[in-house]
Image 1 (tube, chains in turn brown, red):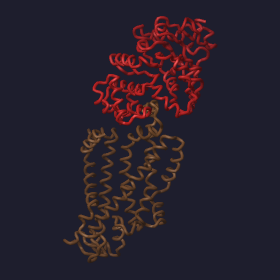
Image 2 (image 1 turned 90 degrees about the vertical axis):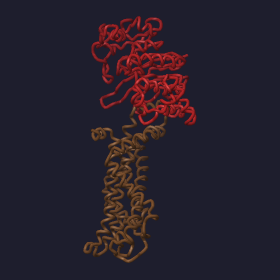
Image 3 (image 1 turned 30 degrees about the vertical axis):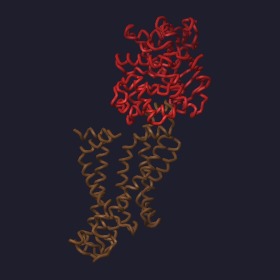
Image 4 (image 1 turned 30 degrees about the horizontal axis):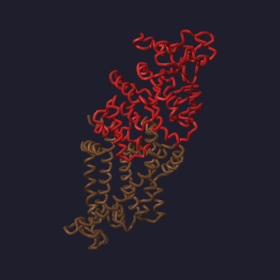
Length: 285
Length: 311
C-alpha cells in the first residue's frame, strides 16, 4: 500500500490543476484549524459597527460591529466541517448500500427503488422545505444533506460492483471457499476505493454550495457563523449595495465559497484523471 | 475406492434462446491419487463440468445427477458446507491467471487468503505459509515476490501463483482448468513438470485441449464432445488406439500428426443433433448414427467408447 501511495503522489504531482486545487484547500483548511490562534478578534465580540477596512479591522466590521475577517475564518470552520462530515457519512452509507445492492440482486432491487425515488425528486426545493420544517441548526442541515447525498454514491458504487462481482478473481476467491461478505470486503471494496474518493470530493462540493444557499435563504443555523450566514446577514442589511460596504462584507465570503468549490473541482478533476487510465493517457501526450 | 464419483450428471442453463445443455449424463470416476485428463474442444462443456463439481454456477442453473465425494453427495450439501469443501478439500485452478488474480491485492495476501479462511491461522502465520507455498511452486525469492502485485508477475509466474493458491490448504482433489493455456512452450513444460510434482499425492481432474500436456500428466483420459463423454481409457490406449472417430480426428489434428482438422463445427449446445452427436462430422456415419443415440460401452478392458462402429 505504501509503495502504491508514493507512486500515486508522484503521479498527482504532475497534475497542475490538482496542485492548484490542493494549494487552495490548504490555504482554507490551515486557518480553519488554527482559527482561535490566528483570528485577531472573537467573531461574536462587538466593536464599532460598519467600520471600513483599516489596520485594526482588516476587512472592517459588520452592522453589529463584529470583525468580518474573524467571522470569515470561523465561518470556514463551519462550512468545511459540514462539507467533510456530510461527504464522509454519505460516502460510508452510500458505499455500504451500493455494495450490498450490487452484490445481492434481490436486496439491490429494493435499495435501488429507494435510490430512484431520491434521485427523481428535485433535490434543492425539497431540501429547502425540509430545512424549514426541521428548524435551522447545524445537525439538521447535516442530516438533510446526508439524506440526499448517499443515493448518488450508492448508485455509482452499485454499477461498479455489478461489473466487479463477475470478475474471475471473485470466482477464484469463491473457489477457495470465501463467503460473500469476505469477498465484498476484501476483493470488491479495494477496487471501488478510488471511486469513493472521487465521489467524496464531488459530494463535498455539492454540500458547500447547498449549505451556503440554504444559509443565504435564512435556513442555516443562525448561531453558527458559516460563509452562507455572513452572506445572508450582509444581504439583509438595507443599504448594502448603495454604499461601498458590500466590497468587504459580501465579496469575501462569496469568493471563499467560489474558491473552495474551485479547488475541490480541480482536485476531483486530477484524481479522476489519475484513476481513469484512459483519461490519463490523453493528458500525458 | 474412488475419491470422486459422478453419476448421470446434467448441467443445463436456461437462456432466452433455449436450454444450453452443457453437460449431459456424464459418468466419471476419479480414484485416489488418480490424474484424469478431460479433453475436448472449446465449448464441449469441460469447464462447466469442473465448475459443477465445485458448485460455482449461477443459482438458475439446472443440475441433476449425483457427485459423490468421500461418501457425501456434493449436490445435496448446503452452501455453508460446500464453502468448507471449496479450497480445503477440492480446489480449482481457474483458467486465465491474469484475470483470476485481484489486481489490487499482493500475491502473498491472495495465497494467504485460502489459508486464513480454512485453517484459522492469523495474518502473519498465513503469510508465512503463503511464502512457503510460493517456494513450493519454485518462485524465486518468495519473500520478496509475496509482496508484489499481480501485474509485476509474468504469465508463467502468475500460473505458478494460481497453483500455489489452489495447493495452499492441501486439498485432496484439484480441478485444473487449462493451466497451460497461453503459455509458450518452454514455460509450458516447466508448468507441466511442476504440476506433476505438486500433485504427486493428490487426485486431479486435468481439463485441457492440450493433448501433449494430458499425455504427460494423466493416468486416464476422458474425451468430451458436445457435453458428453465419448471415450474413456488409459492414457496410452487413447494415444495408441483411439477408437472413437472424434478422438481419432482430434489426434490427427495435432501438428505432428499432420494438422488435419475435423471437418465442420462443434454443434450448438442448445440444438443438439439427433442420434450420435458427432454424426454430422463423422466420416464413418451410417443410417443408424442419425437416429439412435449410442451408449457408452466397454469395448476392450478399461476402454469405453460411445460409437456404433464397435457394437
